[in-house]
Length: 339
Ligand code: AHM
Ligand code: MG
Image (cartoon, rainbow, N blue to C red; front, side):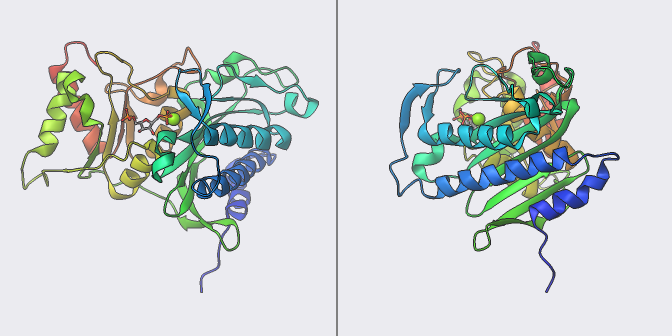
């Protein structure tokens, strides 16, 4: 029987990837793993307890917050704040970032950005949801309070990123820029165990994931790509298969394993689409690029973008390299106002 490698053991082993590592990043990743187990516990009981439904407040984007969103936000904030490895944190659920003023936090090297519960509109119908996180090294001086510039860094500056999918099993997938590894939660021992070593995304695929309800208000290039996916052609394995869960983590996770493309393009009424650069696009882009895929806004790499706002949105085309390249070619050819 092969021996089990737990998330904490793996994180400690991989610390050697970083010369002169002090162990802070390892502890931070471990804290996030613990928080995600707490969230998982609550998500699994969602149907049994009176925790479903809206809490009655709206978040900064004007969307209704679910009780589990708020719970997950607090679970992650508490885990990393008291763990003492971050000087600040920002999440999709809070308008402003938090700068933690305890001495241990002021001395910390990292900031964390996260979407505590992505796809939360799916909770009531028992569909997979997820947590997404992104870690940067602070740019302000150690000892100071965190400031906005610590957060507004390009995705290329990420030190680590990951997601947790609360699906038929719960998985945590993360990268520190040395490949992508996935861990499945073994409920009987309460540990994430290494199950998907060195994950790579197929160079090409036949799954496309997009909200086709927005088709008519998408650009010509995007419309043409979707039509192309549906046409028959033996040589290129078409027609492709349409799969859209409407839960970003679940859609990207499936495509990462099977090969495919997820798209949330801009539309006439929302030229930057729906997804957030800092909490959704950057961390998933880091993972997918590390796995050998691509993540762009239809033109440029997501991780090259200089953010100007914590909550800014960005069109997203992410997945197998050849599929992203194909949609790019059509956008380039057909869209006068390039996406
Ligand atoms: P959320 O962060 O408010 O949950 O929104 C993000 C979600 C993604 O998980 C999903 O891919 C997308 O919104 C679905 O949007 P739509 O319903 O417009 O297709
Ligand atoms: Mg989200």
